[in-house]
Image (cartoon, rainbow, N blue to C red):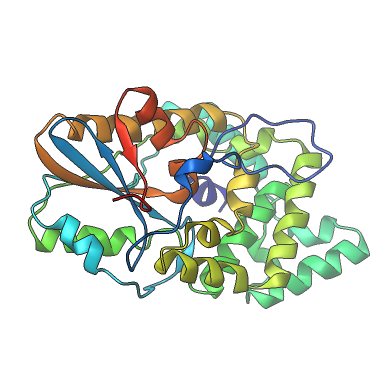
Length: 312
């Protein structure tokens, strides 16, 4: 179960700290001048340019309602005639045979005893209430590590509330295929990261579990409001979305290096697209797109021109 969780999202930056408080969002520090409200209807798109090529970059939520409706006219104009569409990484692979230590760490997370039975009475009651809210049985959380339990609960909460990190990328892939636009997406072997949750301290795991329980108790209202803001081109409102999952995953060993690699790879795909005259489209999650050291920040450092949705 925990293996699925490690594979279900791309970990973000930061090595495990000695934590007394909740982990910070690894993409918390934004490049302020890139955070604007779009001048047109629909979700915001940034432009990365050189002398003869433009890559239109659609920033998307890290979490959104499944099959969310959004104004597509502006996006479809950019899709027409594009040389390529660059999507977030998908089809993540794991080669367990090549990572025996990862398998060992994963097995360390498993337990025949439900996680909540390890908790003090008050904590057990709170966890059980959250578990019941997402419609799962105690045995579903067969782990001995609080971070693993937190991540499983987060996945269940998302599924129960019809939230996903795959939209609108799935729709955009379909739209590109319908127009015979080539689609590019990186694929990664996550074997070395499999089971890394077992190496996270229980103190850090406990802090994340409290964060996840609070998110489940609060419900999906914040995600829905942020998704609505995104659909209206309100970047500030879209960035207000809680990212408990990403914050908790950021404490796993190896997460910082993996996050740096995915950002470097995404920036390189866009840089490569700029070598071909014409235009292309890229899809990137908002915070990694706009953060300090993020995709656009890296491309500006390489000398490319970046324009915001608020510019002509």
